[in-house]
Length: 477
Image (cartoon, rainbow, N blue to C red; front, side, top):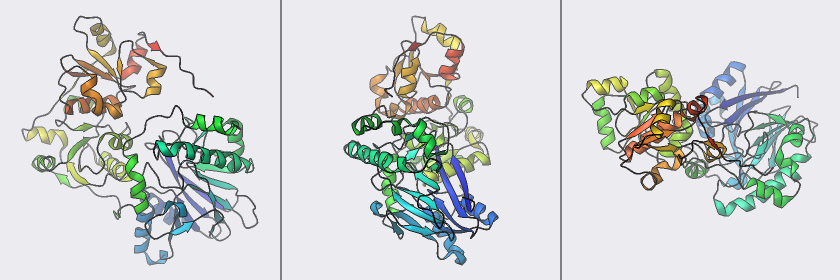
């Protein structure tokens, strides 16, 4: 499609993509599944001389706050964009001003149009967007949201157990009776991709074609509906707890921020006041820095964990946050990640970081760490520690250290007391170290005093050549 311009914006932390789509001929453009920090779309459109006309959402997202309202607000300030519109699925029953979209509707970009295709299954209201030339019967490019993704589909269980089976049947119809019938050479751009908890695939690719999916996507190779439903509803990973709040936020429309917030600098005394008023500290420095010294009871979530997912997993939605980060770049990145998932109550950051906290005679906590050889040696002693593996179930099922206890980091706070003895030392590990930082901070908040981190996690144990226990778990394909 000569006239079509597509720019993909990938959020590695969420594993999602959003898209700026435009006609090169007319310069009219749409953003599909926009995130809330919309400056990137505005800068790109401005630089290319495009006129943003629509913000379109494929569904009520469970994993991020739509940026459609933020775009409408910021474009509304510039009056040449007064005809900008938000498009949402009619079945979403959105509570804000929008163009209500259903199967067969077309939105014009001049020589191209964006057509609406109903593709329920990942969610009941899900729609996909096809881009058509003036004479096209079928779209040449498909923005499939969470319906068809590279090597998989969107999962049907995010609305709760009672909706899962009916949605899986809808997903079967969407995949087999609609999308699989499209021509092979159609380009497919999904929203959910590698690293997203919304999907059923582990492919690292971010776009595909219908033909490629027909050849290699297991869900397109299951013609039997019952078998498809079984496959779509089993072996699904756990997912972050904040998901349960996102649909309602997106149905109502996210609060307008007017841009990425600039955090206020707070003195140690002001941080203390915020903590007394119910705020929590999120420390996004890397693992070694957090272990060396941190504010007591803070959440240690290194930026790379990724922060965006784990904040939403372990900190209750709506909690006021104070940030500890070492550089302006880290503060900006953390702020973007917080607002993308609706963690908006940002009270500020600790100016001067942990050093300023220490200089004002406030206490710091540090956490000891062990190398793999030290752990190996200690496990053979009489006073051996409890070894806690906080990786995901699928990682544990693949292989783990014999005798370890296992609980995913995301649910650790709920089960730590019943799972772990308080009178024995606990050594925590994940794959490389970031998630164990989260877990260690949760244990500390629960009053566990004698906790250790395994340097470089399970990987260090394996690289040292020590024995692991393997569970041969084969997934039914």
